[in-house]
Length: 112
Length: 113
Image 1 (tube, rainbow over the protein chains, first blue to last red):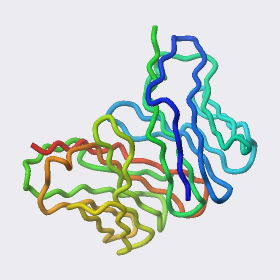
Image 2 (image 1 turned 90 degrees about the vertical axis):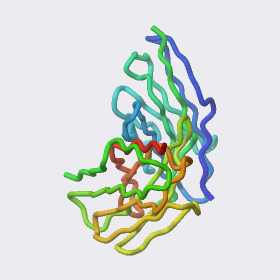
Image 3 (image 1 turned 90 degrees about the horizontal axis):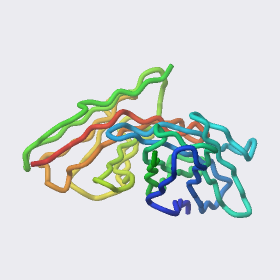
């Protein structure tokens, strides 16, 4: 079975500080992993994805994530937070079939 | 390019009234289609998914239903809305078995009063 755990439902960082959003997964097969961002009253937008190529994945808006099989993790990072990064972030895992499994989300607040 | 359309953007409905939300995808064939719901401050709850015309899988038993009358059309319905049906409804599509990821619609904010 597949599942995703996002540690920390709320994360606050100062503008310019490092952003680190944690995601751990459980999968019985080699997974596909995704990070999505959701702004208020909008749909989810794909930030980046891991599909068994390079373990360090770069996405949009300066975000990146590293797939660590030994730690079953796919943490999202950004070196310097911007006010526009304030949003809800979701990690998801796919078993390469028809379903995705989402974490419960992490709300990122950026403090000026 | 592929696009997904979801409407209406907002909806206020009285308890006991019917519901119909529509989602259409353009630029692809035989997509997998999904309906999710987000309650206020909550994560994503998968309601229904479909891998083909007339094929609907329900994840959560409730007073909602879904239909796929055409390849790229997915409809979420209810005969009688409950207060607990309020939330943010999202349609999504993807290609089966690939690392494509979901593409989401812009969502419908449903308030049942």
